[in-house]
Length: 182
Length: 93
Picture 1: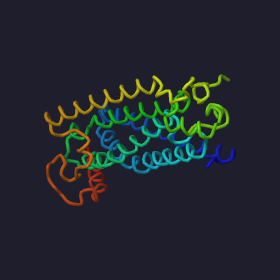
Picture 2: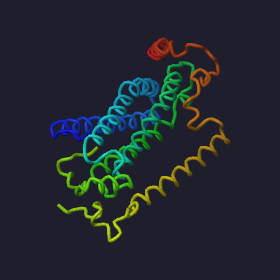
Picture 3: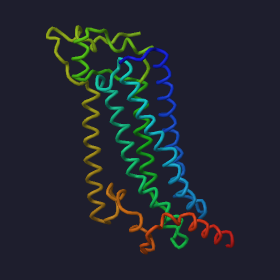
């Protein structure tokens, strides 16, 4: 079902807001993770892990799901489709994998916060390089997804090719100017 | 704006069959597989060496991983208390 132009524009706006918001949040997480690893101030280090645990649940997870959901809506509601173009499939996979890893990592966030709140725990035990690695990889994945949405590299999937042949429509790239990115 | 002619069946050649995945898809697929394999090997090596890191650790219980080694059920529920104690101690110091 193709959305009317106004609805499509609104869906695109929401998708961009949530996706870029998620990217920005991950950037903040990377900065916090680096601060926790390098800071000499004990309170800063411990507070960082407590903050990331709360922020992951209240900011990262909602943004990830909102980005995924609006992306799917944007794909299904436009001629781009969800499985017709390779770049859309790649974006979908990146977003889904990133969301799943984030959900799994919530346990780690909670555990790191528990360790940080333990006054008896040594600062070396509190510090953890894992968030730096995960944030950096997440940032890379989301930047890749953003680049795919902007450049939209050509390439129809077999399904997309068949659908296009069935409908006898013109190139999907014709929608490029007004269609927006899923 | 340049038209993407190869995305339309009528420009695919005399057979009008599916032209296959473009080069960037194939290259990306190979890179992803190499990366995944590398990650898998790294995780296996680390899990054998330390027995601590890997995706599986994200699913482990919080209580069993406390640095002090003391298992205390409901530890998460006392997070605020623990933090408050630490802050009090920190301000005194």
